[in-house]
Amino acid sequence: MIQVDPDVGGERYSVADETRQSTIVADIRMAWMWKRKLLIATSLIVAVSLFVVVANYSEKPYFRLQPMFRQGFSSHWMFSKQPYKGFKPHLGYVSIPKQEPLKLHCELCSIVSSSGQMLGQAAGVQIDRSPCIWRMNNAPTSGFEHDVGHRTTLRVVSHTSVPLLLQKPHYFFGQGNNTVYVVWGPLRNMRKDGKGIVYNMLRQAAVNYPQARIYVTTEDRMNYCDMIFKKETGKDRIQSGSYLSTGWFTLILAMDMCKEIHIYGMINDTYCKTEGIRKVPYHYYEPGSRDECSEYMLHESAPYGGHRFITEKAVFAKWAKTHEIKFFNPSWQFL
Image (cartoon, rainbow, N blue to C red; front, top):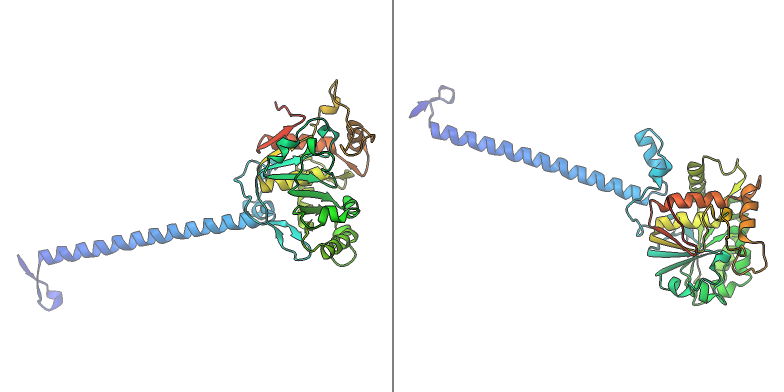
């Protein structure tokens, strides 16, 4: 059937032509709708990807996320089991003198306590099988290899222990020593303006041993560790007269860097109240010193300037329930 359209000057067209045009218009609309959906989906993927990158590389994601959701997060959220992020640079630890972030990851970290619990356990061979072995402060391996192993990948060091390292600088920083040193301390000792006594010592060590891998904990990271203590215990570290231990800083770093953590020679928070406990020196390399439990009790009850070792161990037990953390010599039992 042929019709005449008066609006187009009497031009003749068929119904088939009209149907064809309608189909073309519908196809164009459909293509436009799919293109729009694809654009929206792509934009969402890009936005999520950028969010993940910011979260992974942020030093304090807790503070970045809190304003967004307008509410605080519990300590359970902060230390609930998260996807392993070991390949990211650790911005809270910077090298001397280049000020570059620490880049290190480990599938399995074995953390060797300095406790006298290490003596007589013959754990050295098992420890040395680990890809990454962590030690604390100036705890030696020489003469104790049978119990504590030979190798050291990373050593977390208190500002108060730096002078002890510098008594044997070639042993700790000399040629052939690939150990990474992560030093923590308060700003008064770690400031970089020439007035930080400990920082000045480390800077000189880096000059004397340019191959040494020395990192310091940033002020932001120190504050972050204080904040975690308050979140977990309900106590302000400074107001409660507490000093965080090297073990505290070690485990926080390990949970950020290691997929799995094995801890050797660390007692739990109830050990010292248990009958028939093994009495050992506070440090395995200081025989004859005050026994471990006496040292723990002394610090826990000190009104000011004490390490809250027992309180910290209770927190570690909590973290072990949401992370791949295992304790050896002695083992820990969880309810």
